[in-house]
Image (cartoon, rainbow, N blue to C red):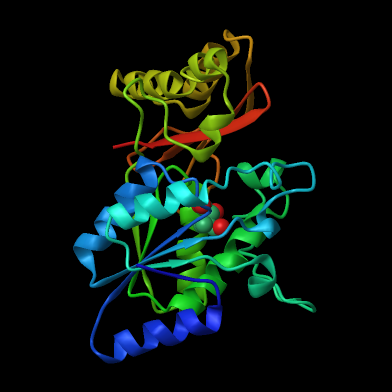
Length: 282
Ligand code: PAF
């Protein structure tokens, strides 16, 4: 396994392999790897000849009051995990490798970036779309892998790839959960033992939504308000949003019936930690 910092060297190494007919699978991450990331890496290992994992905590997707400085960076552990999963390359650029002095170009996926998480995290998806487009240009992968937990991120990246004719296939892998149902996230490490327990209200509220829909309660407003009621019973959980939207354009389904394919998404603050989760209606 090679660890490469320079975008130029990364591109050249992969260009050589591509010219020999090798296919490239790419897993973009911010490190602090957990089973969710490993499921993407394992899938890439199965699908493609060469697996590239990028580890870059992208400053441009954090707001001024967010956790960029404190975001976990367990690089040694991440390297060991990648080695164990037989990753071929870790691409680990520095901030100035990605945003050299004078950097001025950003990508906005209009409309999709200002709703749900975009409302309370202005500029977040502009940062995500920009760095992902840059990484796609550097790696030029055949397939890139993303987790369904970041549902809005996935929708925005799929839109961007289509709109900008970026020649990469996007594969979305299911949410990986702990045994008790909490979706894995690098930010779960911020939770105290009590908060970890309180956070279970998040998957439970999605289970409640699923049960309501399966029992025939399909009015979006009604399902969302019962989820809100259940979450608010837990004193440490503060909803940022609970939304039932059309998966294609993130348009709210308020007042309509929930149909197959609708996305139920939520962001909840547990103490100082903001967690997201979602469920797609089957
Ligand atoms: O999902 C993430 O870890 C990040 O948003 C990504 C896609 C690596 C871009 O920085």
